[in-house]
Amino acid sequence: MPATKAQALVSGLTVMDADPAADAEALDRLALWALQRYAPIVAADPPDGLMIDTTGADHLHGGEELMLSGMVNRFFASGIAARAAVADTWGAAHACARFLASPTRVVPPGDQADAIRGLAIAALRLDAAIVNGLRILGFNTIGQAASASRAPLTLRFGPELGRRLDQAMGRIAEPIDPVRTPDLIEVRRAFGEPIAAAETIARYTARLVDQLCRMLEEKGLGARRVDLLFHRVDNSYQVIRAGTATPVRDVKRLTRLLTDRIETIDPGFGIEIMSLTATQAEPLMARQVISSLVGEPEADVSGLIDILGNRIGERRLYRFAPVASDVPERSVARVAPMAPDNGETWPDHWPRPTRLLAHPELIETMALLPDHPPVSFTWRGIRRRVRRADGPERVFGEWWKGDAELAAVRDYFQVEDDAGERYWIFRSGDGEHGETGSHRWFLHGIFG
Image 1 (cartoon, rainbow, N blue to C red):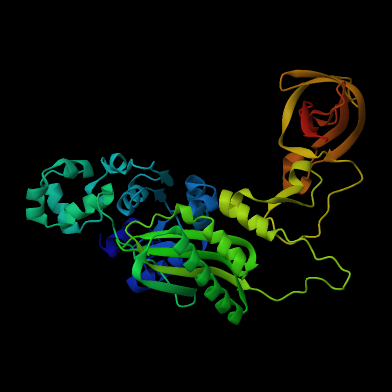
Image 2 (cartoon, one colour):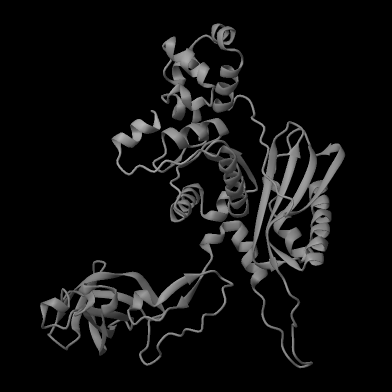
């Protein structure tokens, strides 16, 4: 509608001039951001989308569903409303992201045809004139166009409709032009004759890694994430992405991380170009391994962390770090395996269980109030008689975090049953005043 009419309907409406060039530039920057964090192949999908080929990289983010939810949440935290979908083809993912995702959608492999069949014809990325012409003829959904005779539609609208249908259904490939920037450190190798043998691919991978590490050394950098792209003769890509816990330019380590996953590559009719890119690099300074002739070198587990992270996913590897909080479940945080020490320590004036449950579990008890430990308790359907007990240790609520914690307290006890197993249980409340807690009992940890 005209801007004047919109301003009349909505008081205080802000009107801004469109800037397509700036929008395209911002979309390219967003594509480079996604390239460094999610997958080796990313392309802008104007005017408002990104195409990300996550093949070989989704396991690093905990799977497709976790990857999509994390991506959407990152955009939301930056003030960008986003929807995301995963499908076997670019066309199907494009359609599902805009018409089905709320805010994410994962289409099972091979189900892209069924997923998009009921969507509006506009989801096929067709020109507006073709969409309007199809609607005039009574075609409102993709399924209706797909089931109609192809020849009359091609004669009337040209080959574009059939090509988009075949691309979305996965009958023909759709070439991708991935985004790249001169700032990325990249090495390439083109072959006069396509290669396909795994041994040959591994040999040239080692050579590319050696060249990349030399370039990184010249710039004083170490790679945190490397992408190995295989350009096949059918104009499609195969990729391997490897990440490291710390900046690395060790040729043997990077070569191993990449060659361990060569079996996932399908060379098809052959690979004509291999390119290796450090999509994420950080400064790497030389450090002294030992300080004296009799000194022992520090144990370096980063190599093991890199191998495990690339096999099971980076998000599944973590370590626990202390947090300044007296509330037990808040005193532990998950951090990256190689994250620096924050200097915090856990309190040592009272023993803590070797296994702390993520959430305290309700137990049934027989106890004398207010200061006595239970005589027995039932946890997960098994009744345990308490033979020894120590406590209570009183933990107060963190009053600065909410009004509900102003008076909240917990009384913790260490108890031992007849089998010699020791548990960490607590009563919510002081046993006398109702505002301090529910006075129910919970099991929170197990001593080794």
